[in-house]
Amino acid sequence: MIRGKVAWVFGNNFDVDFIVGIENISTTDIDRIVANLMRSYDENFRQSIASGDILIGGKNFGYGHPHPQSMMGMRAIGIDCIIAESYAFPFYRSELASGMKLFECPGIAGAVERGACIEIDQQALTVFNKTSGKELRMKAIPDIPLRIMEKGGLLPFLKAEMRYPAAKVPI
Image (tube, rainbow, N blue to C red; front, top):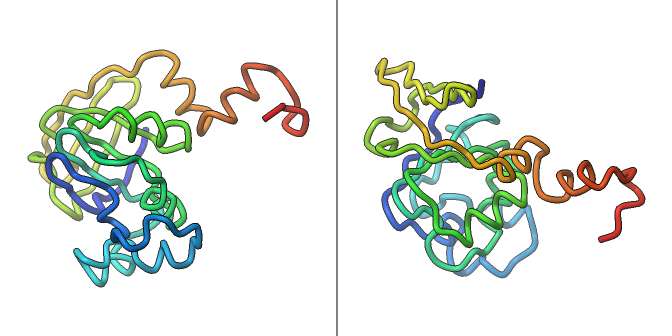
């Protein structure tokens, strides 16, 4: 069971590069990335969220180029879970590999508001909005993506699958 507060609700076809601003998509400076998270949307975003909060997206979330900076910043402040109606495949693939928990739930963007408390039941495949009392059904996650998510990303998954000690996994 994953519990958290909705940090933000994004619309359909959202390009995550806008989370840090186009001018920051080539930086690797995590402090600069974190300082610019959601700046164009809410200057107080960082003060209004807590570790464990959850992002919500509409259809085709992550549309555009799969630059990692925005989600690197989100993970750095403790947001490692997104529920979207659907994902752009390059975004899904790269964020799954990086350890982001990604769930698909039709209708989620219209069923929650920023600040709502939600519970994700991975076994029952449901999202329960504790604030409104509404429950939605999530899509099932295929076996390999689920195992990658459970291990915390592609590298930990490969280490476990290959049964190598962490220091001896060839990269």
